[in-house]
Image (cartoon, rainbow, N blue to C red; front, side, top):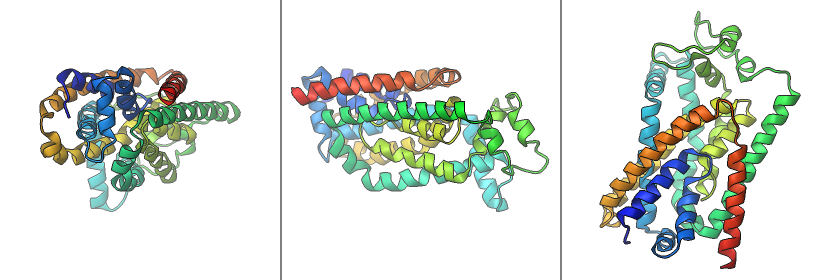
Length: 327
């Protein structure tokens, strides 16, 4: 495969942005080159091959996005990893950090198992323009329906958020993490982490975490956004948009990181011949747009919804279906 530095940077910019936006990175790294045509379209055709250097390149870019998420949530991850190991050592869950760590572990199990078995064949089978366009349209429908469900539940239910409903979860004696504290105005601890948000996420039932995590399996289809379906899963379990986004990013980090690490041997082997330089350039570009995406979305979802992304996916998907079905 001949992958130029220009192509690598452009694909890296697209991947880094669309991986965190709820609009599917894999769908866009298939559709955008197909729309551009010429040597760009050749990249997409090669992705459908079982031994595709372009596929290895695209998945390898995930490492850059995962690194950005780890750095952005570094204080959170330090506490979660510490909470995970202390809960094992003490054989019980006492704090919000410990419980949230186990929620992430449990939620990652379904996509971890399915991903190991089906990730590569699904990418080869569905990484085609028409298929990606269809699934991008479906992604828009999922976002729209999830948003509509959340609005309906919010308007029909007594104004009690996920904090109060789940506030009975034990998070440590004398910690002051009961209903009153959880519903209080958000304050930050010494690490700058929002205490109220941590309590809200730690109060998610384990069954709900498993449901939200399992939704990531849909992202194996090119055009379905991991962040989008995970956020919808969170909204259907009573989270607000900001908490759903944060939980989505925490859940997706180990999955994205693992996907990238699994492709490193391919890039170090024959599939990486002639493209290792472009891989580095593309990774730098992906990291840059990932930073912009996570900072923007962290502010955006404080007050706004998934609806604009749903409209975009529906429009882009339908136009692409027409384009690649007719010509």
